[in-house]
Image (cartoon, rainbow, N blue to C red):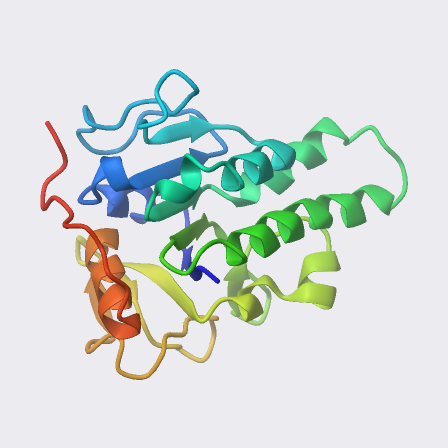
Length: 226
């Protein structure tokens, strides 16, 4: 069973930037939108059959993501990041916006369920990070953004994660919140993180998780290859 972590936050609050110190050789970034990384990223190359040591694969197709997660090449990685995860649902919704009825919402919810369920079943040494946009309701409660009500009412995605962090921007400082505010779904095991706010550095988060669960890792670089 992998260790899954949810990283919640609005666009522009540092979710993808938090990857900047991860070792691309040990990481696979599966992103649903093709866009430049927000940091110097010469070491991050495309992952494909000709370059199985690559670090980036772009797709918004859930079947392709599931196939990737089952690939022996991918399972040799230590870290898998699914960026802009909610767009797998949102893009499918717009592709099917001409369809009438509510059946499509159930099917779209199943796309997310299949990926989460498969990611959870990966080998113990793998850490999987879901970078997910948020939405805030009329009562000020912040949660993971979904399409339709099926995931929220029947599944509650945050419930399958032991660790859920949220981006915070405070006086120009980009950070992660590690403790629940009472109006969000942030959570972490007792003692994993010493402070309520930590740097938005996924490499440091990964080290804390590995230390907590005694997961052996290969050394990560402290700076991204320029």
